[in-house]
Length: 403
Image 1: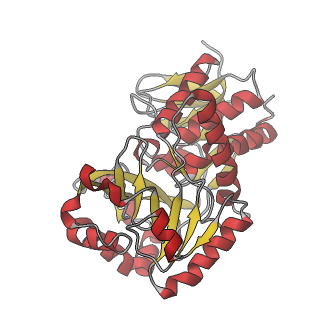
Image 2: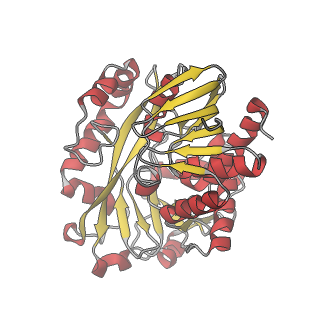
């Protein structure tokens, strides 16, 4: 029987791959394995995000998101430059369209400055017209260093690098059970059993489930929210030069519908945030009874629903009504017409929710016996992935004694 791996990393998204990379750099002799349930890597949150390298404006100073996003943006940009991955530094404007949004915009500017985001600038209407001629705003923030990339390409480059370094990558290997066998974990999958002395749980939409399998008692439940996009038709893409974002609702950890250019030439509009009926509920009709019951049976879901029911009802209405979706977009770009857009794809955000209904806003990384669990890693986790990986590798070196 082969020796057990020193560390098995569960999940094959960009955070998992970045963590394996950092562990390998920290402990070059360690035997590492990545265990992924799909046939290919990066098929879920990594493969469905908008491709923005965030600069770190939004996040509370001192939080994981603030520290790791700013560092991660630098690291991922450097990695892409070294590996010939296309990055476009198109810049972003965050715009206030009403007077009552200006104080919140001021708070964002102060946060970005405190977080060390380079190049942030207040812009008036005249400067906004130069940057985004079709955007409606009374005031804005310009982040010139916000960039776009294909994070699927970044993840693929991580995987090639890891394979070259001898890291085992097991696909088609959904972890269905975890048990302790002496000083090892045995990870049961339909195809093979993986033995490891330590585990790092980067299972994204199923991170709380995997944590429970491993004997932990997570204080959160993953509630899936589907984010739906529209595409602007090619002949109307000139309405958007870079990235146009609204001032977000401070009570809700979602950024609001916005406009995003991609490195492939598309312009996406969205996403919304609609409760999904399955953890991989990329379509409205996707329904998993057991998973949806897991949502409905969680006290934190009902506490959250009571707190945000108006917002939730509006999100459902906007999901079902293209006209309502376009009206929300017209707040940012009034020249947009309903026939300028077509339905695009969707992603699912793995949102950790506490039992009191609070939505966890920061990254949440917890430790249990011989394991580290990433229990909340929504946006900007792709941007921050290399920094998150380094942070986890530091925890692993300290807790696991890896050398």
